[in-house]
Structure formats: structure tokens, C-alpha cells
Image (cartoon, rainbow over all chains, first blue to last red; front, side):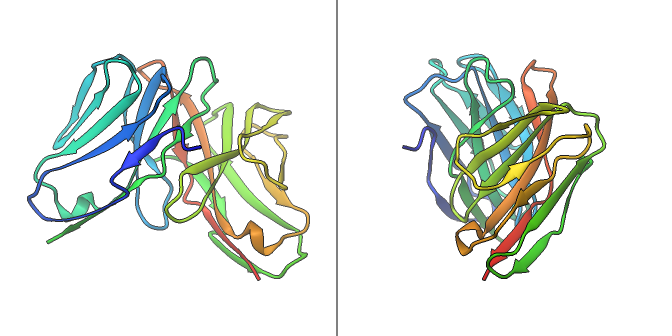
Length: 112
Length: 115
């Protein structure tokens, strides 16, 4: 059973388009993180959200944590080829001492 | 740039061989993790450690073993590799971020192929 469902799994868009990636669960998470992974490399942390309803912006990326802390979204404005990669959401539950549950990822391809 | 290293980056071996995947970090982090990742699939935690001489199995059952004799070093060993072990293995360490939540730093991974 997939605890964190990401959608879509694959997304291919043109440069300049906007997109949203979703991360959903039936479980409550104490915090949620988004990572970006490029081919042949390990994931790199983009953001951590901890409060229900929280919104964080990182340049053209906007992250939102759902009010009930069961879901999150990542919105990219005016996507660029450099945004290409695998986007992973990861949730922490309670006092798990740093352990994370990962979604299966969204593979984003931005074509020039 | 995170200072966490994994060797080898790629490994192709035959069935039955014993292998050790190396992971080292120079950040002084107490917590370290091993994940297994297959294409299009989520990262599965197979081992974690909260410090020297502390190791626990993760959510995904694995035939591999780990050790943590030094803070900076967290090697993973497979006594007898099988084709089902073919996967990408990612090592990570973590520290508390400004949000009060652990933030994980990943190595580049080892792509293991067992023939």
C-alpha cells in the first residue's frame, strides 16, 4: 500500500508552461518535504513544511501543505529545462526520529 | 553541496559474490540511512542508524547488513548477491534543520547489477 501517492507520475511540458504536482495521503504527517533528484544523483532537499496550510516559495516554486496535513502540492511557474528531474515528496510521522516515507515520484521533463 | 560519498558508483557482479557498498559523510551527522530505489518507484528505507553501534532495519525487508563503528562511515554488505538485489542504493545522513525537522542529505548512489 502506497502511503504517499504522487500525481502525475510523468509530466512532459514546454518551457514557459505552469504545472502542479500533487502528493496525497489518507494519513496525517507531522511534516512534509519535497526533494528533487537528477539522473545519476541522490535527491536534494527543496523545502520542508510543518504547519497545516503553510505555503513556502522558492523562486518559481510554490509549496503548500494541506490544512489537515495529509497532502501537499508543488507548483512551478514558467517551467524551464533546468527544472527537469524527479520530484519526490516525503513525509515524517510523529516521533520517527528522522525517518521518512517517500512517494513514488513525479518525473518532469521540460522541453525547450 | 552535501559532503556524503558513496563508492562504487556502479557495480556489476555475478551471483553469489560478497559485496560491500561504502558510504561516508564528513558532516558529523549522527543519523544515517540506506535506501533502495527502483526506477519509477519510491525510496524504501532498508537500514538506519542513530549513532555509533546503533543500527536498525527499515520498513523494507533486506538481506543486506550494515555496521556503524565510526560516525562518518556506514557500509552496507551483501553476503551473497542475487539478481533480485539489482537496484539503486542510496545512502543519506541527516541533521535538524531550522524548521526543527530532520533534513536528509543524500549521496550520489550506487547502481548495483547482479548477473
